[in-house]
Length: 371
Image (cartoon, rainbow, N blue to C red; front, side):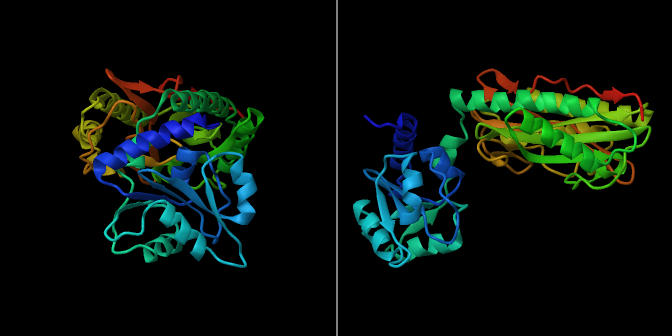
């Protein structure tokens, strides 16, 4: 019996999809795909590392200096090569073991693989047809299992505490970078690492992907926090908005519009719904309020091992959503020179609709101005 039962379960599910999609060979580089399937996280450099999977064989092209470390995570065979010899013969042997030497193979390539790795593989194949991973390992990864749900939930519960603490720590004169450091330290004190953090004071919030800088917090200034940690291999992601002082009428009006847009998208998110329909539900609310041209991005992105992965919730995405999908709903309105306002929830799709990971309310967080 394998010492790595989760990897064996996922490999069996992958092979079923390979059978149904007519896939002869799947090739993964050192990526989140490889980590999800095998729990192997090889050092990524110019030395070719690949996991090849056929209908009846799976093995690694593995630099010898990585082998001992990787062996702790997998019992799949290694086809090793040394720097002194190069990877050619090891790859040839691996392809032979996969029965992948005949012409016209249907090959799935890891879309995140280094180009030189992919070309090395393709140069060893005879007139293959090729595509990427959407209908094989990508389809499996898009539907989270119970263990993945638990990991993502734990990361979000920690993130809730960090964001609440960050709003409580607001004080006049602090910089955006000061608050980033506070959030990063909070994660570290609770066993997590910073995945990303965008702190936006005042007009900075009008840039959807603002890089925190030396902007200082002043009285009666809006605050946007978009941040996430990584805990036990999985990330969190959440955006909350608040005000340091007394919010004005325009801000509270825009906040209410964005909150209604989130609610509309949550209601539209059901198994079988198209991703574009969820995007439209949020976008229509904002357009009807007169801010349609100020919603500058898609409504959401998938989340798993990667902070951004399928499914993507865009106006053009005709992907049917499925039970187990995890994705963000994050509409926003951006008024240049004044403020930006975005509210974000990460959800998992259940049979009866969307379940939000965060326990922190989306309410406008108002903090009295203090020095």
